[in-house]
Length: 584
Image (cartoon, rainbow, N blue to C red; front, top):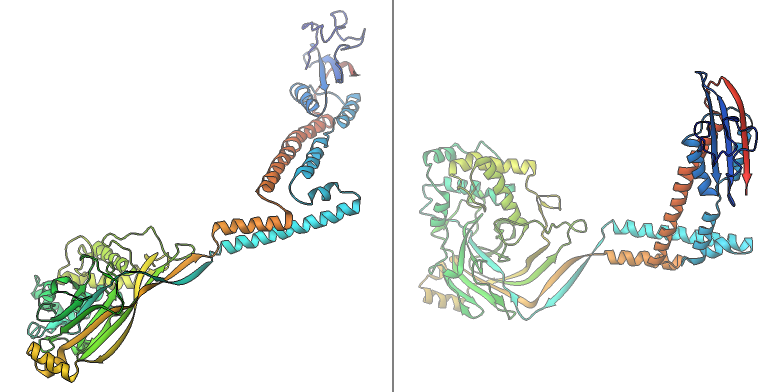
């Protein structure tokens, strides 16, 4: 904007402006305000304000094209234009704005350049093909291919996010394989003389071992008054020590034969553990040296004397059998006698042919395992071990102690506290489902890798008539005693192999990328380069639309609106209005 007045004396822009002729009527106004290829609009306003003071203004606007005309309009009009009355100026503005309407040449040039250079097949024919019918044909073809590509890619993403899996089952043959742990339990849990006057012991043990199998807990507070009276009368009684001392023992008198791949084994090779059946013993426990099998058909052979006259149990609780319950499990996993135990009755020879089963599960969302869960008191994560630690945590939190059958660090629960607190808490845990196994959202999801053993057990009568005579002479036992107390068990691998069941991702990310690339190439001849070209084109196009049209054009609209509907200013008099349109 240029302000010309008798006080400023800006003769460069107002050469004819003098004190004698302040309005510039004696000669042309702004005769030097132009340059090559440039349009100039000069508006001179003169008048008096409401105080009677004389005032005048000269407005100069340059136009050199789209960009500079917008800049000139903004700098010259928006920042300093005084309101002007209707009349000739309005017509000048209308003509001027028509001449400076934004050109689409740059955008059209961008479209043609993209169509000519892109690797997107068929697009050049669709935009630039001649004659018109050929161009329409290619437009239909390109549009159909684009629709097919989007449809197929959408199906690829839908399939990928359904997290599909496939399961493979393979047999692996090896030279040697880890031998499992085997836990042996006598079906008669206590020595008869120790519990002759303590029938309450059976009920106590049923309450104690409820922590191993939560479904055994019914939370019934109306248990026999005899149990409560016994606990109150014997506050220092330890059922743990009692069971270990008067439960079944594997020693030289009960372990009549033990052989592992031709090498003798002894009672010291068995680790004592507590289970639902009281005192049990595990061969090849995790704390003992790891043992491997390198021959099929041979393995562990034991002959046990269950001492049925000395050991007894309560038939009213369901313990009416005589024999050995044995569990074949991983050395790193606690035994689950109640759910996975195999039975070998007295006077029987049980031959167990085993096979290792390894299962590999995918993590969520493809599978249900969680590789980030670790147990505090077990080296290897198992669902059973996790449930034990979960129950131990809740009991310790509510009762301040830990049952001796559960892992954990803390004081051991006394019998009375166990009965009054821990036992009801088990019912609470079951009712509220605080310790659940299975899905990834449960406390104890399935392990990402676990080892189980399938077992085929066959039986024969033991011993034969000649064998009975031989054993009777060897162990100085009657034939009837041998028939009623001896149990013979063989455990061996059927073959030196294992079966691996592996859950796999049916559609990994590499296959998803390959599917998308295949669809792009088949329908559009596209690739990653094509996608980059399209993105570049869209970004530039977005710039033109948003920056040129959405930012600058609204300012022109506002300007036109101001010219067409100017604000009302009170002018006492108008000396004149002079407008010049100069062109180089």
